[in-house]
Amino acid sequence: MKFFIDTAEIEEIKSLSELGLVDGVTTNPSLIYKSGKDFKKVIKEISTIVEGPISAEVTSTESKEMINQGIELAKISSNIVVKVPLTVDGLIACKKLSTNNIKVNVTLCFSAAQALLAGKLGATYISPFIGRLDDIGTTGLNLIREIVDMYNTYKKDIKTEVLAASIRSPLQVSQVASMGAHIATIPPKIIEKIENFG
Ligand code: G3P
Image (cartoon, rainbow, N blue to C red):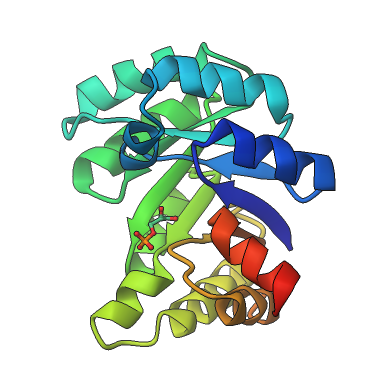
């Protein structure tokens, strides 16, 4: 299973990269806001440190603007993946950007049926939010299993990778690995816990 790091903090990315634990990075507007830096500058800086995929999220909720923002974000570096929300507009943007050979991470996925749509529309990654499903009293982990099984059944047509997101504990990291998630995006503080106790 690949490790993506869920942060926009440059120092954290640098130190985990030196350890060899960073296969990619996921960011979102709130993580970038927390870093206190300019959105595009942070993404550019990350792209000078990490060779793997770097997810940069659109801020618009409207498909045309998402597409425009996605095209601009993709120009920052060849390893940028445009992150769009799993909404109707997000799916329209996913289809358009993917058709134009721009990689897309469809985020905020809460059901296998939603993941099926993203897969059919050419998403490179689907991000099921397991922690937030746990928050509302369902078992987020089950969703990982369902999507992995479903994509495997249709692997000739669906090439989308399952990127387990909203991970809150070391246990969830090993659980999503056991379920066959291709990738987990992990906050640095969870990796630290694994190194110390997990
Ligand atoms: O990977 C998605 C993450 O940034 C959101 O996590 O813990 O706020 O649900 P969380």
